[in-house]
Image (cartoon, rainbow, N blue to C red; front, side, top):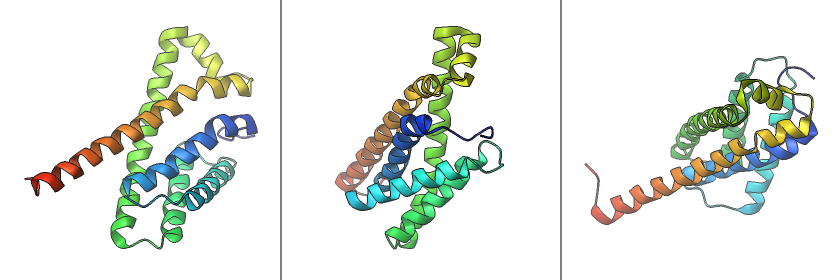
Length: 168
């Protein structure tokens, strides 16, 4: 495996939940009606493509951009999206990528505070795929919290705008 490829254990503990969260975020932030069959299908396509991309000889970060690009394309093809949804899906990709970076940074900082630098490197870079996967679960939970919190804020402002007219 190359530097950014992941094991099946990591795929199950990290890839599958994050794949579903990212796919769900596209539905939420583009105001696309959730059709669970389509969402599940898109999530599995996203997870599979992300897993395959991580085996390419590319640098970390490029894989995220390629994965989000694939999700943007597959989402818009699946829903035969109009231009406004296409634009919102691109904005969603950048927002989700930012949330992932923030969640993983917070997770790293928390591990560093709790366990110290050496133990954190051992947890995240060790040989146990299960330990690596479990050490990153908090970042996935933070990502979920960020997505749902952002969606709640977005809905609050949409409802406020609908109740009080156009915001100035």
